[in-house]
Length: 147
Image (cartoon, rainbow, N blue to C red):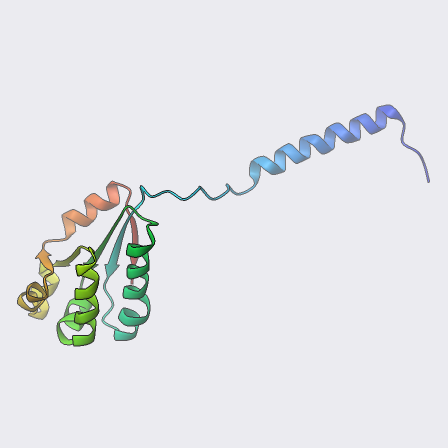
């Protein structure tokens, strides 16, 4: 086995250090520490009851209670408005979440199209035009999660 001379070893060490610095600079960024200033808008559009019960409301409830977000808002949009108006179990679950402080808003255009605006208001949901508010949330840096 051949021994490396000091000048060769120095070049090898310098090259290794340069490569190490290069790879470190191209590595993916480390996750940021827990930040409670993050805001989340959950856009519930699916008319599928399983998605509502087993995914959308489960995660929304977790997000609301965990403190991972400074604000959590549920937006009822499209077919979910019809599903919610017809499903008493979903209504009960949502009323409980609203009592715990979850704000819930529904798109009036969608709810009117399904003829359920009054039913959603009776649950306690704010029913209003949602296009401009959603645009504002996106522009303000909200995280938007769609189910």
